[in-house]
Image 1 (cartoon, rainbow, N blue to C red):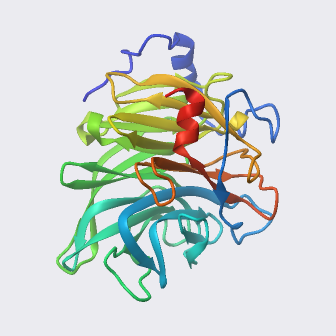
Image 2: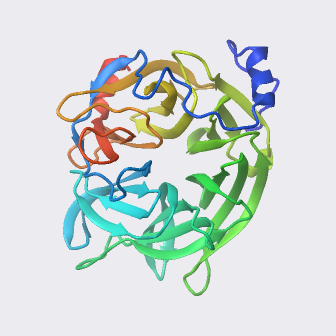
Image 3: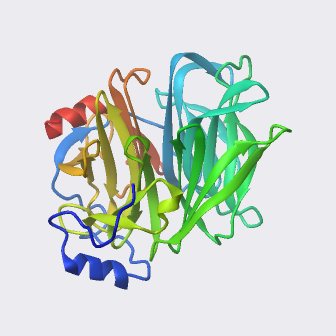
Length: 367
């Protein structure tokens, strides 16, 4: 679907568009001070992961969730899926759906991670994980494979990389367009690169760049909604944009939500989608006030449904979130879906990831 910058939906002001044109640099954390939490419906996380290994630094960043209908083996342990989460100072964690560590890959400066089904390698369907990689000498998208049918010491394993001209890879997400797997990279300075990922005759990854565009300023979070052929990107100090997922739409986009108090507060960070029956939702991280705005996105235009915040409960609340990920339907112990959120200020130890039952969010927002 081709969109036009001038065809904004109602409620988006000319001033917001001027802001989009003028923002050219990073402005960190625009809330009312570190730890400030804005208004929103209250929910609680039900469990959390151990702290990431890098202590005393901004380290835990972005997760991805995969669910299986049958048990799989990761490092000799049985699970109904896993959560991949980055320590952007040292590598990639693989967690169980109960929060325990199943595997750690010391892969360097990985920032955003996502995963996708749809590629076959050496005759076996694989889960492909991709992570934006800022490690000197290997900047790009690092790729990993997981074999759902593997046994024994089956693990997530390095597969290769997507090379790019982006100096500092930042945001990353996968998307499916028909039979194609698309990899979307967002650079720290607002570069947008889209690739089609495939498998060559030797079973190695092959990529072809199909779109390059400039978002305008520092950007990170991205998420795709294949059903509406939409790509959503957070420009951190400007707002939430909707692009066409079709690379032929180029730089055309529509501003869904400008940065605004009590709605989406800079830095606008992570994005994720969740399918709940015949409904689909987009969830964003409003890092500046530690809340999470939600839009329903299966209609003609995104419909804002409210915000939630994660407060103290069985585990501590969540503040200053960078990345988040969600999966709808049965996800291990979560019968109707889960949202996994990075927590910047953990009560014990260093940063970690927390799991929120989707049913609690749905109930809190009346969805």
